[in-house]
Amino acid sequence: MKITFKTSSLFAALECAAKKDIRYYLQGINIQIKKIGVGMVYGCDGHMLFAGQLPYDGDYVAELNIIIPCDAVKRLDKKLELTELEHDGQTYMLGGARFVPVDGKYPDTARVIPDIQYNIDQTPGSFDPALLVRARAALALYLGTKPKDVFGFIQRGSDSAVMHAGTNECLVVVMPMRATHEAPYAGFNRSYM
Image (cartoon, rainbow, N blue to C red; front, top):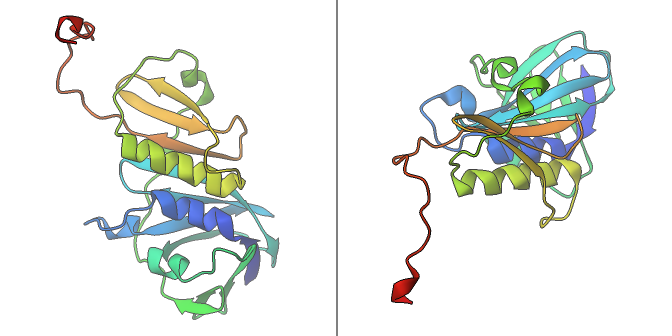
């Protein structure tokens, strides 16, 4: 098997993958192919999930579900437009370098990504700003947009939120923080200004 796809897709998923986590299977990106010509790429750290379509060229692949270690993706040249994934039955190669896939089962991403009907009513939630910055960076990498571009953000209160680009090719699901206080914002006391 030898397939070629956009390098930026892998780096977008890497942006949301776990860096150091006891759940070793999150320290990589997941490529799943279930249809001819297009697969999916995922990156997850337990607090956020990147999901993007992964169109590919090359050999016919009936099915593929592999976790590529973060280190193997980091070795790729970000400037390359396309990257090859090869498997000869024994060894895997990404961009010409050998790697050993992470032995584990990736989380069920279909369970995490909310259906479109649940994105209608928005309720504000509390989110870690660092996660939102990483989510925006992942979408910008995937889409090849400018770093300052703004993306839609659908909040659902204490349920997961979705950052998206208005297309059905990629999104980032972000889990909210549990608020330590439930008091509404009462305004700032201006008498001390």
